[in-house]
Amino acid sequence: MSKSIAVFGTGPGLGQAVARRYAREGYTVVLVARRREPLELLAADLAGTGATAHVVTADLADTAAVPGLAAQIRAKVGDLDAFYYAPTPGIVDGFVSATDLTAQRAHDFMPLIFYTPLELVREFLPSMMDRGEGAILTAQGASGVRGMAHLSGPGPAQAAQRNYVQSLRAEVADKGIHVGTLYIGAAIRNTPFHAGMEAARAAGEYVPDLPVADPDHLADQLWSGHVAKDRLEATFPDPLFGD
Image (tube, rainbow, N blue to C red; front, side):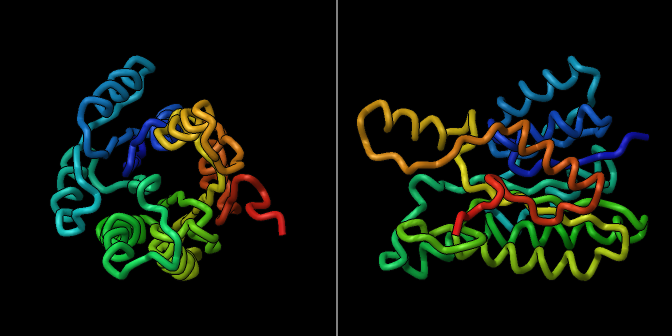
């Protein structure tokens, strides 16, 4: 029986790249996002390569729905061998100066970025612990590592997730569970954020000087860290900050 991974946040950039990377390694893939049509197109594409993929639609900002989501996944593949969590919040509209950040706006990011992955760990970690193997993978933006001027908003929630993941990693590392995180200070090709940057640049508007990341390269980093269990916090670019 093949191993299984759920990709929570199967967006057009890194999420799809992770799904393809693990499918190439023989994993059965569960594709999770809000919109069904893109997931079904990807599932059909993966099936054409001989892989098995299942589609589950979910609003990952609805933390209360996690038990039902987990039940849907178990009905398709049983308990997961791995999961990847990196749904993208409305980053373009979400970034705000720290001086303008309100408690409500900060709270709005917490379910998607922090509460839901915490509950997914509670759902799927016990079976991994019983087997003595498994992988929990996440990806975040650079603001989860260091606060930057005018780029607050999702950052505090990402920092909370990072703190939790670091604690989790320290507790389960000797139990065969790999907990790996990728921090990205770049625009990922094929994403709405990258497209928006390019459109703004073409219109002569100010665009932050960010490198552009290839999602396949990032997916390779997550996979290689999973296999070797030695890249617990990878960054792109490396180093993430020059100072």
